Each structure stands twice: as C-alpha cells, then as structure tokens.
Length: 126
Image (tube, rainbow, N blue to C red; front, side, top):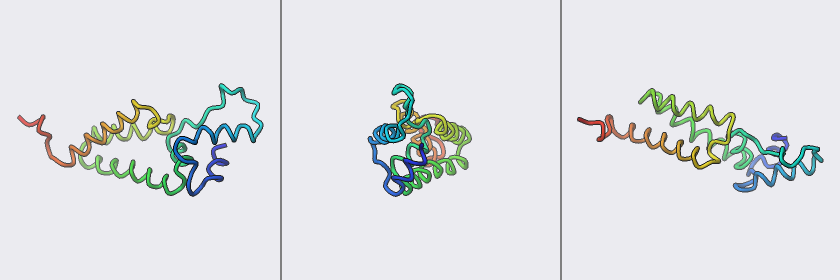
C-alpha cells in the first residue's frame, strides 16, 4: 500500500495535508473490504514524510534529523539519548504529526543548540 502511493508520487510527494486523501483514494481504488474505521494511514514518521514530501524532501528530512544526532553525540550524552529515543519513536508513530511530539522535538533541539553555543548554560553557572 505505502509503496504504491510512494511510487505514484516519488519526486514531489502528495503534499502536506493531502496524505489522508491519498490513503482514502488507495482504499477506494483497491476496493478494500476494510471498514472505514480501520482504514488508517501509516504510523511511521519516516514513511509519512516520504509520502508527503517525495524523495528530495525525505532526504532533507533525514539530514535534518540525523545531523543534530551526530552533533549531540559529541556534546552531551543525555541529548544524544533523547534524540535517539525520538528518532526511534518515528518508527512506530507519527510523532511530528501531533502537538506534543512537535513540542518535545523542538525542546530537545533547542537544548542541543543551547549546549552547542555555550559550554555551560547561564542558568547552570554558579
């Protein structure tokens, strides 16, 4: 199912906000016997971004998530582990499709930027 949608929109993706429409179209064209309550979209953030943004957007998304992970690995173990947990949660849930997920991700990235820009944040100095 996911591969069909990806292959039909490989370069540009389906666009933001249209992913549910694409899944609905797929279920109709496939003449799925699933009840409408079970016709859900992917629960994988990586697949969601690939379907939404296409191949180039997906590559940019991977860069934007892996680059901070590499930076955090050299700066702070807690930030590295936090980022790793978030990236692992992308495998089983559309973490960035919910407000709590976006807020948590932005918070972790902000802490990482703060750690990169200063050896010790002001609020931790004696």
